[in-house]
Amino acid sequence: MSSLLTLTPEGLYCPDAKAHIDPVRPVERAIITHGHADHARAGHGAVLATRQTLDIMAIRYGANSCGQAQALDYGEALALGLVTVSLYPAGHVLGSAQVLLENASGRTVVSGDYKRHKDPTCTPFELVSCDTFVTEATFGLPVFRHPPASEEIAKLLGSMAMFADQTHLVGAYALGKAQRVMAKLRAAGYERTIYLHGALEKLTDYYQTQGVDLGPIELVGKRGKELAGELVMCPPGQLTDRWSRRFGDPKTVMASGWMRVRARARQRGAELPLIMSDHADWDDLCRTILETGAEQIWVTHGAEEALVHWCELNGRQARPLNMIGYGDGEEILDTNDA
Image (cartoon, rainbow, N blue to C red; front, side):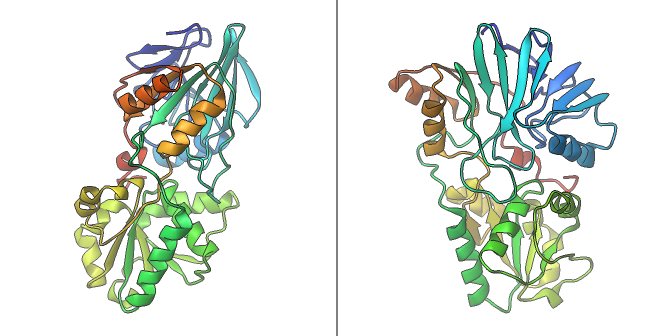
């Protein structure tokens, strides 16, 4: 594909660095962009990532999730073989990074998952100029235009005021989304205790050790109907699980970029869908491609063909990578082990 990057059955591979980026199965050396399960897998011989991503992998997979772990700070350059590797903020979740590969032939950036909307729980996206840009396209269709998160939180608070005698049960993914919803609630002035399903505890605790202030939090434990009028956060799958019945007749809420699609909201059992995504929407995907200055665009998981077509209309050479093994990391993390 290029002198810096090629495609193998395991995923993107840099031959001169002898390293894969977010490989879909165990390899000798991996560079990991962030901790979501479709990008960060256990069993690699050596892993290079930000310290926070390494910590998150250890929380999810255990201390021995890889043979050897090496942390790299944002902006720090590391020579790997004939290539210089550096990581830059992706704004997706805590510790998420874009990967910059440099050698005499040019600069290639692998975005991983990223967003450009403001998020108080992680370092904001940093634009990196390059010759080749490998971009995600999870929401790579013009229909996906995410509203400001503050507007969606206002809907939630409005519902809580209107249905003050009911528990509001908010489905949010354990890594990133749950903490962002909590932080946005605090920013909007919500000061009461937020109650958590146990599956959200470890990662939420870790966020707080990293300086993310989420206010008073307690585990639900064995409580149920006594939490009427309160806000409870849980993995999305729990919205329709018998666990939710303990709250009597709760208002079910789901926070995801997929809530733009009504069928997805119905599938999740969400009475109140909140359109909150940790991925770039259509406008930000297009804007980022132009702002990188890259002439070559490679499009990974998502609506690849639509974004490739847009690139070609705007004078960029583009190709879909048709990589398997990746999806919306939010969907994959809809389990209790996260």
